[in-house]
Length: 278
Image (cartoon, rainbow, N blue to C red; front, side):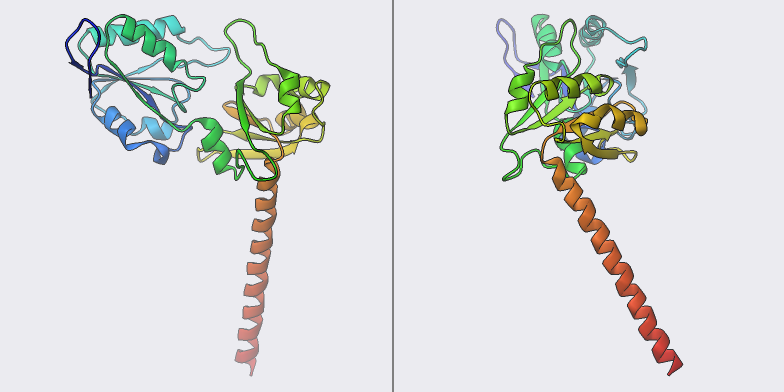
């Protein structure tokens, strides 16, 4: 890809920001795979799953710049500088980020930083966790009669976090909270105090779109208890709203179908035994 920039000649893309999706390698776009395969250097973070990392070419330099809570990690400033240094060294850089780079991924900051230093940047969209993880958990973000809109928020901020709780509580919508596991009690308390029913359905999706995915369903007042009872670990996504009941219906139907299949198999076995005895 070539793009013309002010005051410079068209040049080949040097850095590609790739949204790798929420974990399942099958959710990578074709464009994302090509960017990974054609890179000289791959710079990736903590939310890029092991399955996706296994696709990285073995002969390509791989730099881990992950961010993990309560662990030593690269600052955003250090990540920006690493991207710039590799690009200035003439490398074709693939910056792989979990989900979508422009949804709570700080991809916009990295793009602007590089562009300010004359580096050509290309961005590859990825499936954001709110879409991928809820779909794998049989939870639609919108559903006729249940939710006509959805809101994505993060419970993590660089400095102070400002959330309009009353607006969230009053709208008939789906709320998806990124990076909110450690603040589960705070989230439920604020929403209930702002008018949301304590019985509002909620789900916590752990390690979404990965083989280890687990989904736990309950009600808003029990959000912290659900986390503690099942020892849920990050990364995890919190989903709040009536759409969670769709997953409950799917679970019920799955159990019903399984029971019917077992009963059908039992009946067939009895018929076969009767034939043999005759």
